[in-house]
Length: 250
Image (cartoon, rainbow, N blue to C red):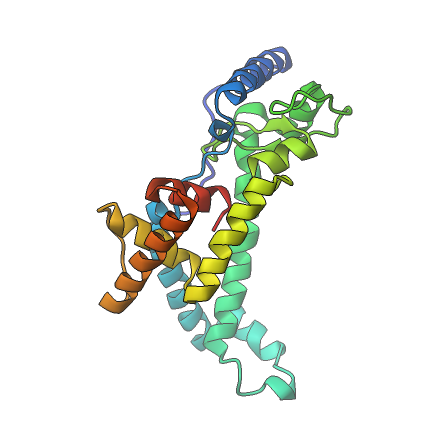
């Protein structure tokens, strides 16, 4: 069955959209006074692991079939041969996989952009910027049409207007010495133990008694040791370490 983009059952006129956005911005302005991180909630990677595995396997299967059967992908590979220095180094299956991955990236960008139009129509982002006069987080004035747009949750709700400083603050990129120090401390432990960010995340999950897949028992043990060391040296709980990873997209 062909893919069909989701469409809203609601049709709002310009005045309704403006009223909705003003109320929506006010909601997050008040929420920011209580807890700024309420404006930057991200679903954990583990929650989408099964979906991503299925997409990855589908891409691999598609690439193998497309690279070895007559069709547009096979024709494209033939008419775009590898330069001699690369011959024998990039198998056709892998080249087809890269092409499929690029097509998926373009599709994803278009579909994600369309989510902003679901409720507000084709001028969604323009109207968000036009109505934004102050940063929801810092309260500082915004030049007309110059707001940075940020999605507090990527579940279809519209973006909110932020200043550059407010955006950096939400994403944990502001020039805060405490935040910089915490990142540097955890990064130093990571390098010392030669572990990865997924190891830290899975180690925390394991120590919290949550499901986490480790390739070997040894990796499981070292991941938990990594998590324990980070918790000990930073004073963070395992839940707080996971939240920090989410905030920093790690």
